Image: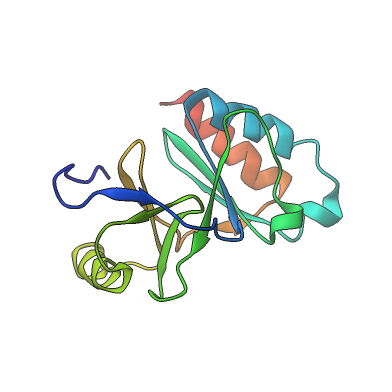
Length: 144
């Protein structure tokens, strides 16, 4: 879901948060998907993923998250339960207030709030990263 541009702005974090999710859009999402097909089963077992037509989000501990060109990273916000943000950016409004407002509007949690493209992505339907889940994502993308 797209968020109105005038709702809030973004500023660089003073120190990046510890990554807990890899976030990839468009062609970068396809590259990340291809990379996920190659990771060892024991690593995949520690990851979860969700996707829509534009984005692929893979969550887990930082050491397990894959890297491909174009991937950015996100993390849960310490002061705002249920809110995930980019690791290098933070909103220019209090994160807890933003999280509460979004929770009312979306009625789902956790929510990943993304800077560019501006979007809110529910993370409550992440599934374990299995070959079957990756196949369902690929089939979904073919239809979109």
